Image (tube, rainbow over all chains, first blue to last red; front, side, top):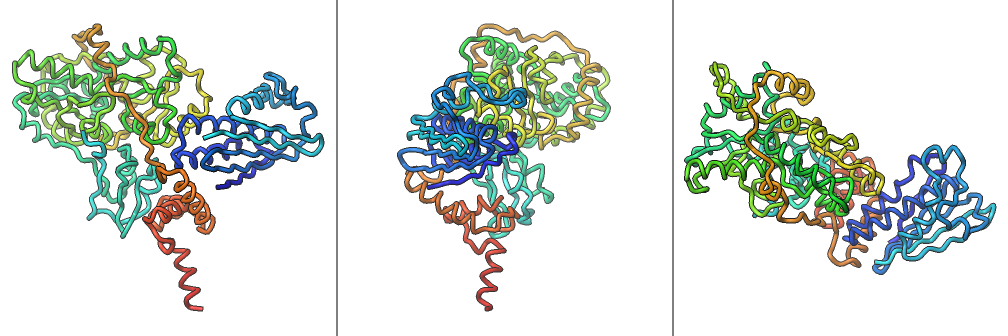
Length: 136
Length: 419
């Protein structure tokens, strides 16, 4: 099954809606609670990134009996150096965002940590797509 | 042990099939079918929200009445600390405890005394290494059951210690056996309860295989029996020994204050408890030591079986303590007690929200649910008898409801037929 969520770019406080909704869906499917937690954390980080870096976008979540695929798309500035962006602590977040307690440079590393597979494709000036897979 | 015994029940004759309870239930455990509410037993956590919200008093708590104590040769009352703040004139606690003896009990054991022991054991537990933080209080059974059905990842955060009532029951029973030489079946141990959730515990206990509580009498019934006798007690025997730390368990934050840590969250009201648990589940509150979560607003003083308004009761707490002549507690925190307060049965996740054991079947159902939901008006009016349009879509797919139970869908169909 496929779920679709729009992520608005103007309010980071609203981030987490998609991850909560998916959590509820997965518990109805009696997915192992530890896996639900992985999905929820990975999705939450991705939602925050979509808001603060991507300026909003959307998430598609595809649930199949073998795995859960989460595809986050935005039309933001793109990532010039993905390898560097993946480094723990590396952040391009503005001072304002940091003052709000976000942008510690742990978003992408956490997403990788909590998913079984992660692919980032990005084009500067066009946007970023992150595909995370969590196996069941 | 009865897995699905519930204290919260419905009086069908009084139920008018309105939407109040279905909308308020935190686990979506109520549906209105054929004009009457129906509780889904697996989902109900006995929080008592429906009892509080029902305008027709159709939701009830099954409890014991005062006359049921006569089945026993020796009767012990275990008053919850919330009983102390129910009375208008803020009496000395000794007056209340003496009153209990006047209305038929042979012995009184304050649950607040047992609470003090739990506080000591909790301090030790929190200080241990590799404890999953934040530690979540296990005092409110509705909250523990909420975790059991909705927050499987938080089960390891629950404080694995018995609730004060269970310890009070055990200690008072042991005391009575050695004092009277009666066999335990002749001794009745009665909890004077502020809520239905605790009543359920005497049938399906948490953390122990069998409860030592023989029965539960609601505070609002004991209150009526106590009022006339308390007036006539002139020189009460001084038996109140639970101090401020134990008695303050009556209100939310009371348990945390006793722990002498600043780093706690005290949250009350089941819907706000859920919000905090979602944050813990997401890993946002790992730096907190202790979370005291009470299902009722105000804590136990907000229980559905109390008399006084919880906000008024909270204010009375300090005056009642000031008015009380305390005697030193006789219960020491020995090694035996430290071991006795520990859980002997773990709490396990009960996946009541799942659609089907088979993932492929569940996925198909879920796809169907989403399609149906998109076709429903999404105004969550509750007229169909399900708490929300989404719950309605689930009910249709599970075969418990049909699309035309939705009045908007029915109207559409009628219009279509007319054309």
